[in-house]
Image (cartoon, rainbow, N blue to C red; front, side, top):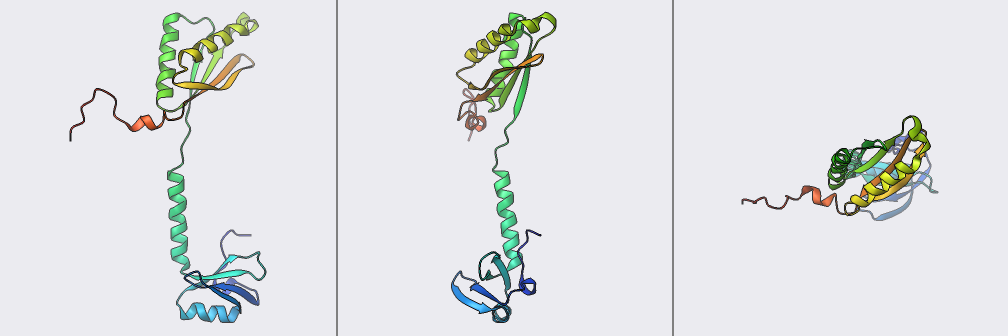
Length: 186
């Protein structure tokens, strides 16, 4: 069954509840009378509630209606927020300088309003020491606590341990503003 509304001669019921072009209730009329009214007004007869008894039909310009509904759908899709998940991979025995570099990347991602999935990869005997990974993830989450919060707690799956951090509300709004120190000419 198609999702399109039935229009004009595709409506095959003996009588319909008719709504005028301005939204006024005309009442229950025969399908022939409804078609005559639509032709006189140079409009289409569109079935808007096919499951009602009798079905509800409206007099409208169907081409214009379809165009406006497509525009609304496009506008709604444009205003949707795309959530981006960035991934940062670490090892349990990470050098302090490497840790600071990776933390800087996480900070940058959170400031940009993106979620960050932090993965700790265990190799060999490291797999028997998951507390090293938990300690490292907790340290990272406390270091960047002012920018984001832990959305998904650390979880071990096979050789990897993952945690998801999300930015605090409002971080995405800061994205479009000019940074401090820049002169705005105008």
